[in-house]
Length: 553
Image 1 (cartoon, rainbow, N blue to C red):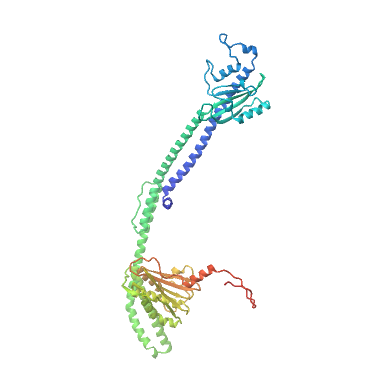
Image 2: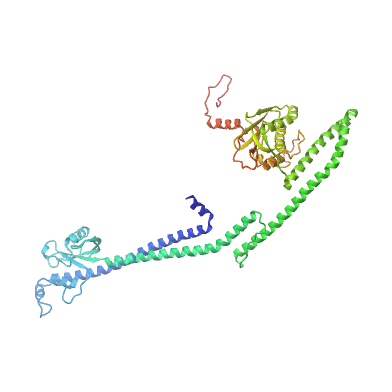
């Protein structure tokens, strides 16, 4: 079922053909039912009208025969032949065509005299029990009301004497006026076998023609959809190859119709896109080269300035207070400038794709301890303490010791700067496939959407806030690049007023794909608080004497 649903969503041709097929079947069924119903009504109405006309003519003859005078009955119609003993027999022979010169009729007749059963006559295999009860009761009611001009009809399946299967039969019943002193009921039995067979053939023909029409429409829809969908599919494939980086991909233009114009527009778009990408690549290359060249060129004058600044800084005690303070400021800003220059060089290596790893099996706990040791002095200046949560077992992983230590140092510096003097929690975790380090502060936190922006170059959550530790604005960007180079993750979580947590996850084996992290990105106390809030039940406490209301516990 899932494969069918997926094929339906992915194939425009299947959707067009299926929709056409469903609509065609619906239309054909509706038209077929309508035509069959109309033909059925027309054939049945025609048969009933013809039967009613014949039944009326027969009743007239029967009434005429029953109303003959005795002298007329005694005279034979042919002097050379003897007349029937009863005029009713003669008219029955005439009506049914059972006489010498008569032709056999397709229907049977029953003349019934309820008062004198011996005076009743029947042709063929019909008998009084073949008359539908409802029809006979209707005639009897008309006889009581002296209504002789309105025959009744009834259609039913009747099994005649000597037959095994019932036949669909139209029965028309009428009354003969009792001019001869007796009341006669006349029933005509018209078989509808021919009409039923004809209607069955018509229905079969409608079904066959409808089925063929549906198949024809489906084939036409398939061909039309194929003619339209094939160029679209080629355009999709070309777009996918273009998105994969094959900028020389183009479509063949055939004709001048809408699809040809689509191919022309696609080719123009692909050409312009390739040109723009080429221009951007050249511009990016120029920018990277410019940053790299400037960074390298600045090293020489910076070294000279640094040497002069060191001399001034070492002799600052001999200067006046203003000059000594200027020497200290220059020394601090030179250190920041050197750090920024080093970060720019590192970023330029990543942009150029020249960054490499120097992998060694290392216990991540040792790397964490070294990074914390490097951050102790800064933490003391900000009245911040570190809370370590290290596992007892070694957490070995193949990593670049220098880069991972730089990541952790950047995370610790960031936590100290934004932690507002509160404790910073450092947690190390490991499982079979990965190791992770989480750095948690309890500072101002992050707003929604800033979890990814925090890794952008030179991004600051509050531009009006000055940097307190002299950062360059590239530390987290470089840290993310270092983590990605290891095949790992560097992720952030934060909420206003709840602080921030950064989680570094690295594979134990270089080149392995990460499937998860041993540590949760959301701090455990936050998860626990959410769980408690979801399961908390409000309880009303009695009011205290100081006017306090109720609270949730």
